[in-house]
Structure formats: structure tokens, C-alpha cells
Length: 160
Ligand code: HEC
Ligand code: HEC
Image: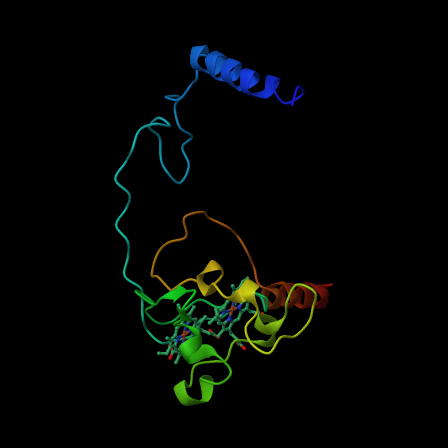
């Protein structure tokens, strides 16, 4: 008990010091995806775009990429009582619904054991899968997929 006593004291002291310190809360914010302003300023966020909902599966940039969702998912519930996505994408449902079955990786737990049903770490689908939107990328990049890289390699070898 004796050793624990100083902790609350330290906390009180800490708050007192923090309250006095010139805390730069209203410092200018970096000009990133949220442009300019100061840190405490609130801007109106851009409106949410509608999901594309074209039912067309998009090419993946690399095989491990979680495919984007080609259909609307608004109001699809995922909680302790049920998982709307699995109502179509589970092993049992996919023949009836013609939705692609979740792949084998979704059945594996973190020890590499294959479970009988979706692994808890893959339960919340939208942690990894996002609906398709017709929007410009927020951050530019010059990513090239493997086929493009191999094509350039083989054509530059032919040149030599
Ligand atoms: C009513 C059935 C149904 C429900 C519910 C559903 N899906 Fe789908 N999903 C499909 C079908 C069918 C396809 C095949 C493409 C299409 O027709 O849109 C598909 C395609 C997909 C794909 C594309 C797979 C690929 O290889 O490109 C992903 C990812 C996906 N769904 C994720 C989800 C997620 C996440 C949820 C829940 C938020 C969900 N789906 C709920 C029927 C469903
Ligand atoms: C931790 C990230 C993660 C979560 C959570 C997750 N997925 Fe995936 N999903 C992936 C990745 C990565 C791939 C592509 C590689 C693979 O199959 O593992 C994929 C592939 C898929 C595919 C395509 C399968 C195929 O054979 O082409 C479907 C359909 C899918 N996921 C649906 C779902 C649904 C439905 C859920 C929720 C129950 C879900 N995923 C949860 C990462 C995730």
C-alpha cells in the first residue's frame, strides 16, 4: 500500500503541469488529405458517394489483395447475432446464391489450423473488403502489377 500512494499524487501533479503548459492545440494542421486549417477546426466532410453496384468483379492488383465488393452493402448487418455477408458467401450458401465462396484463408486461424467455419479473425468482412466507388485515389501512386513489370523486363532483354 505504501508504494502505491505516490501514484495519485503524481497524476494530480501531472494534470496541473499539463494545464499550465502552452499546448499547441490550435497549431496549423498539415496540408494532407484534410487540407489546411488548424487542428481544432472542424470542416464539413465531403459527402459520401454511392456504391457503384455494377455486379462486376474488379481485377486484383496482386493475388493477396482482398477483392473489392461489386454490390451495395448498405445496412448489411454484421454482429454477434448474424453476418449478412455469410448468408450468401459461406460454403453452405454459395451454391444457392451464386456468390463466390469465402476462400480457404478465411477458415484458417492464426495458428494455421483450418476451422469448420469462418475464422473469428475474418468475421468482420469490411475490415478488409470495401465497396467499389467511382472516385479518384486520394493519394497518388505509381504501382505497377507483376505482369507489367515482367513485360518490361522481357522486352528490355530482347533489346540487348
Ligand atoms: C444477397 C447475397 C449477397 C450478400 C448478402 C453479400 N454478397 Fe457479396 N457477392 C454476391 C454475389 C452474387 C457476388 C458476385 C458478383 C455480383 O453478382 O455482384 C458477390 C461478390 C462479392 C465480392 C467480390 C469477390 C471477387 O472475387 O471479386 C466480395 C468481396 C463480396 N461480395 C463481399 C461481400 C461482403 C463483405 C458482404 C457483406 C457486407 C457481402 N458480399 C454480402 C452476393 C452477396
Ligand atoms: C483480414 C482481412 C479479411 C477479412 C476480415 C475478410 N477477408 Fe475476404 N479476402 C481477404 C483476402 C486477402 C482475400 C484474397 C486472398 C484470399 O483469398 O485470402 C479475400 C478473398 C475473398 C473472396 C474471394 C474468394 C475467391 O476465392 O476468389 C471473397 C468472396 C471474400 N473474401 C469474402 C469475405 C467475406 C464475406 C468476409 C466476412 C465473413 C471476408 N471476406 C473477410 C481478406 C479478408
